Length: 92
Image (spheres, rainbow, N blue to C red):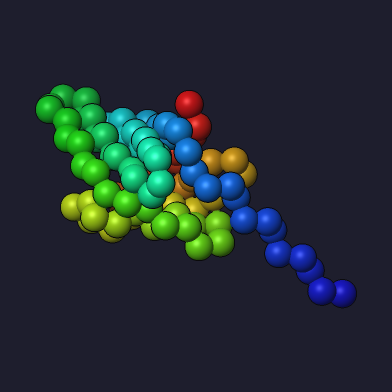
């Protein structure tokens, strides 16, 4: 019996936040394919980067940032290990 693949998630919009031990990461998906990543370390000055995103299936690829980031949609959240440890971005 063939299995049906899961439906692709909707295009990301709005603000998604991941809290880690050392920092808070915020993704803001803007109009079109614009995305902004705000990185706020707990004990130092943060940074902001702007790039673009593209989707493929249940993954979102963030381009034009200091490092490429791949997000995977899992159970209503986006997850990434692009910064080493697992980050789970929740919609705000």
